[in-house]
Length: 339
Image (tube, rainbow, N blue to C red):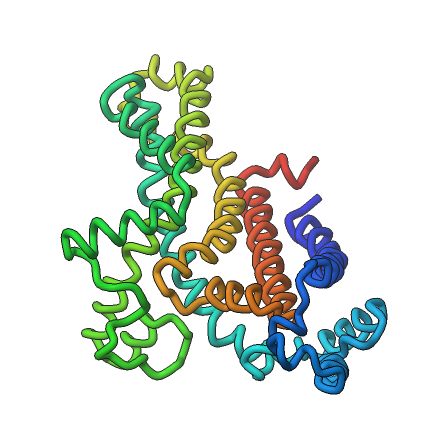
């Protein structure tokens, strides 16, 4: 099986998976025991039958659940995710405004995880039981063990309140305005607009939440890279390379590290999905105007259209990222697509 056939077969599964996501999201959003009418109207208005009836009719809550799902699915096929009960804007408009901030934060966290986790895992394996290895295992343990919300609060207290090294929460300082919208990424848009001061300020605001969000993925990648590297260093071809007198640096990076990266590629895809889910907590702590803050607001107000929109977008991004990871794995290791 060539690479094109392998990718084509994986692509055929995507529509069924996305359809299942829409159904699961719809069922879960309507299975919440709380009352959306009281959450959005208040107790006084919810006691008026006429207001309640008008609210149900306005948002389609007076229809049977199967009919509501079919109507939602039909509208979704036409690019309509409904109107948010909270913001009274199309959900698609809200998502387009909040999603770039989340992707910017998640990509920065993923980049930090890779730049720190892969080298740390390699050197921990090469210098096993040394001080470097102890640091690597410590970072891995702390990253996996510490809750993101607790680490975010501690980081704000230490680096902002006590030391003053980090700026306040948010995406930009209050004195600065957002650059003209091009990509939705504030750093990129500021650079495209020639606003270097705004770009520098945006990077300063991005650094701490990205590092906090990256902590869990960093721990997983470091641990996985170390374990995979230790396994590869014990293979026969590595011992043969050493017996031939090849330089240790060449053996480590050209022969061992390339093969040790194979299982880490899968972990990277799973870690990116966890970054998207962890962004909900991180954005709430750091007042980051992304999809996580929007999801939190939607969940607290029982905004069904917005909740379903967020669920579908996050799950779709997760599926696409894992598809790209599988394709990358198949490109690196032909045995995957030949099996």
